[in-house]
Image 1: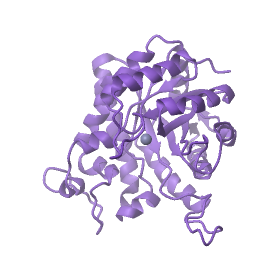
Image 2: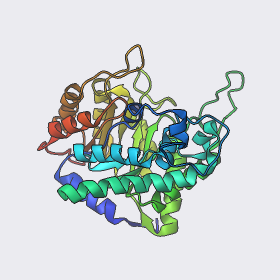
Image 3: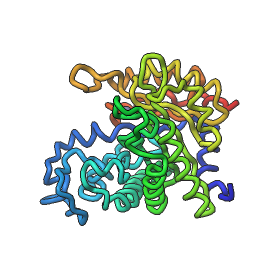
Image 4: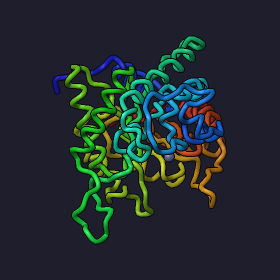
Length: 342
Ligand SMILES: [Zn+2]
């Protein structure tokens, strides 16, 4: 690679050798708590009118709130920063043309990513002005709602709803927007199909080479079945071997599982990966209503055990976690020696 490591990579690696770093928690639960209406989502009334137009309803398009309710989004990021997060994710999980097609909002994708990074930076600068701690903007890149490896049509196993090249193009637009907005890290998360993730990694490498500077990548898979594999059938070890060529800052797991069920899979990744590891489980498993009811202390106790077992370098929360969960997790791992990278 012709790109040199960014200052953020050096700073994060130095910090990660000193202590366990904290990633933020879920956006979805916090956004739900705002009780926003369709008018709020599109920015009528109290919000900022969106200059992008779509005929589809926008309620539920959480990423769009970056443009239409930026103060509310900044406040959530700020709460996570003050709860102890060193690394805070942009609200851009679905900010690709592929994922935004569901809402007819493809035209907003560039702005979503640029502003998505800027709004986190504003929140983090406010927090740093208070306590002097450095903090990092992680540009969040989701899996999209399509898979490049599996046919959605049972009668046509060769069919693909999306190709590697479609994904590479969409991710390229997203990643370039995130970098333009000031992201310090690119976090490729909730990977259920490693081929999708490889398209995202490829887009990152192209963007880094074009600029001559390589941001640190955090790569996080998700285990979706009881046998401990990703949707496309990889074990944690296979997943690591498929992405290690990209020399990520962290490799790990998020979502789908609570901490308890994630533990053996994280231990496996920790035993094979020669880079830093990152775990951010859900607040337990969803109940019958799809809600997460594991409290901050419960999640923190289990994540604290990950730390004492020496299998993690970065920890945070996924679905159902709140600033209180992140505060409890930060307290649970404070002073625990970080995992030694083999
Ligand atoms: Zn999740």
